Image (cartoon, rainbow, N blue to C red; front, top):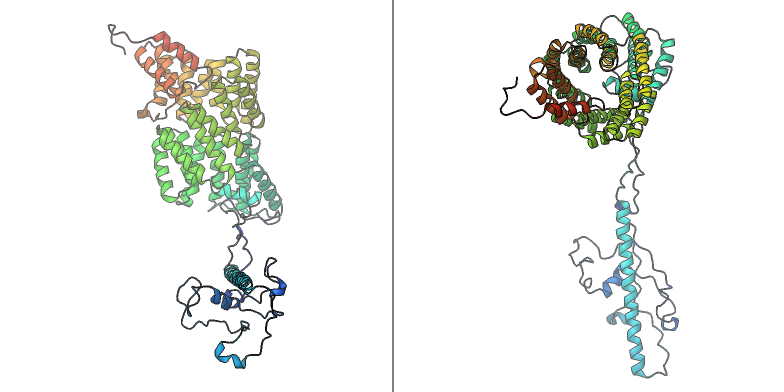
Length: 596
């Protein structure tokens, strides 16, 4: 949007094209044909260390430097040759027509036509000494003539170089204004910077006060609210987003995929994957080749546990488009299938090709999450720090740093990083992780403060339409009422049976004492046959502990070992329990009964 009075129409508009880089000054000719003009007469003063004045003639006529050079240079003595000894073109004159005439004594055969010259005054010096002195003077004159000719050559070459076209100086391309930059990011399905979003929202609000029937601008405003709410965890923005998006649909009920995409993104932010799938499918029904809708559909299908459908949608997406946003979405699908190397490579490509700092930071943060899941602490910390440095408003990267620092035993730094992330982006998950860190340090009172904050945040987010039952159920299973966790997570499973919910419900059932039913859900989360292809240390740990409670010691040992092999630091609370349980199980006995 160029100004607050008349923004660009809608979500799919891209940022205005960048202006052309400036060009440098054009080259100017210094002589005919772009070359240099012939050198003028040499100053008659001569070098300071030249022959004495009494040895010079009273007046010195102008000298053609090129002819003087020809009389002193052996290579130029032959007519028709250049200074480097090569043959000159046949039509090239030895002396340019505008060069000054050479004023020298005429040859002996025409001496009668030449003016008489004054004879030198008699000398008292010995003739031999006088002849000896004349030789240096003659050589000195030839030397100065040679130097003058070389200087003329330098001037000619310099004139030619000056006459060549100069290369334009490289100037940085102008940076788009914040509003158009945020609009371009939203149109490309990429994360937008918070300051840019603030500007865009202000511009759209001002424009729509005087243009209330612009459906595309209402859709853009609603989508910007969604992105701002997602990045700040300010759920109060979601009702405003829904109002703007529905206003867009009322203004243009048909052929309005921008509004449908915005509603799909809003449903995902609220963890309502069933509604998100419906909006995405409606948008694709209107425009089947609209590639920007497919990432939303893939995320919705993943949340519903439909991994085959997500794979088919990804195939269609990659047929329609390629780019950083597509690679990042592919990385998420690869991660869910257990293809960690492919996921890491796709995210690295996305980060390298990202067009804006906020977009690149988001992909680096995703790469940090992958490194954390595989237990590579240094790589994870490097990616999280790079992401936070590029985009200081990316609180997920700060929370990731806190997680890694806690695993490295740098508890004070981890506590500080968690507090900063939680203050600027009050996510219930961050409060849960911070509380568990306090508890692992023996600070139970501080942990209870964070747990109380978690409950308050879930209620606050619920007022904005966000479903927080998954995080609340995980908390209740380990730190509160396991029976309440089972009730919450059963309802969640009925609504959207994704892998995360299956794992959380299985663990809540185990904590409530229902181990047989718990194992069924744990298997869904970890078996590829059930769609649980993701390599997750917490999921393997949960299944191993459930199998241990059922006295299935062999499978329990195998899954606990797998959890610690995937990521030995997966949880400050649960990783020590996994190691203790594995030690208690010991090694399988060679003489004992076969293990189940």
